Length: 342
Figure 1 (cartoon, one colour):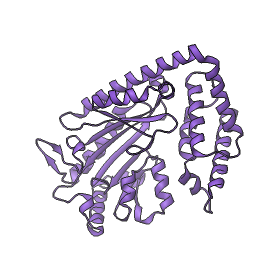
Figure 2 (cartoon, rainbow, N blue to C red):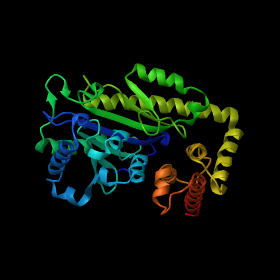
Figure 3 (cartoon, rainbow, N blue to C red):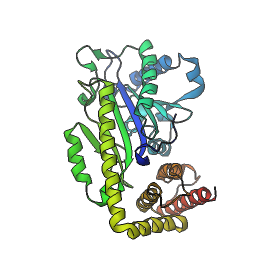
Figure 4 (tube, helix red, strand yellow):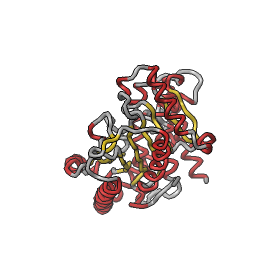
C-alpha cells in the first residue's frame, strides 16, 4: 500500500473505502443474539480464510476478548468503528499485518470491508476492498436486490454499499471561518463532512473527513469520481486561502508555526487539545515550506501515538490525567527530535 503522497499539495492525509454487506436471509446484527452473531463471525472467517495466503497475513480479533483500552486503541488507529465497540460482546474484526485492511463483523451490518492508505488514492483502496469482497461473495450469499443493489441496515448505504472518504488538513479555511460555508455547499452535492473519527466526532487539529452520502443509483466509479472532484475543489480553495494569508500575514504565520514547534519540542505537560492544535500549526509550516526537517509521516504517527488509549497501552499502570499529559509531551519531544536529527 502507498505510504505517502504529495498530490494536491499534500493536503490529503489519507483515503479510505468501506463496503457494507449483509448475509442473505439473516437478521441484521442488532437483531442477533450472541450465539447467532458468533455463527456469522465463523461463516465470514471460513469464507475469508479459504485463501491460504490470508492465513499468514491476517488475524481475527474477537472484541469480547479485548480490554476496553485495547478496543479504544483500535478506534484511535481507525481500524474499527465505535459501533463495533458497542457490539463488543458479539463482534470481531479481521486485520492485516500492516493494519491497512480491516473486515469488521457484526457492526451495523454483518460485514464492513475497510481499506485505508495515505494520500489521495481512492482507486487503490477500492481495488483492494473489491478483491476481498469478491472472495467473500464466492463463499457467502449476500443480501442483494436486482433493483436496489446490496441491502444494508441503514437506508443511506443501500445500493453499492460504498462509502469513500478522504481526510484533509484545512487550517486556512478554518482560520478564515469558511468551513461553515463549505459544509453547506458540500451537503448540496451529496457529500458530508465529519471530524477525525467520522460520524459524531468533532474536527480536531483542523482535520476533516469528506465522504459520499449517497450510494443508491450511482456506481462505484461515479461515487469516487464525484468525491475526487470535490477534494480537488476544496484543496484548491485551501491553497488560495493559504496564499492570501501568507501575503497579508507572512510573519504572523511563521511566528505561529515556530511557536507551535517550540512548544511541542519543549513542553513538559501537553493535553490532547493543545497537542492537536500545535501539530496542525507545524503541519501547516511543513506544507508551506517553512519547516523542512520534519516529515508529515512523523506527524501522522503522532496523531495516533498521542491518543489516550494508545498512550495508556504502553504503560503498565493506569495513568492519571496529569500523567497522561506528561507522557504525551515526552512522546512528542522524542519523535520530533529524532526526526530533526535524521
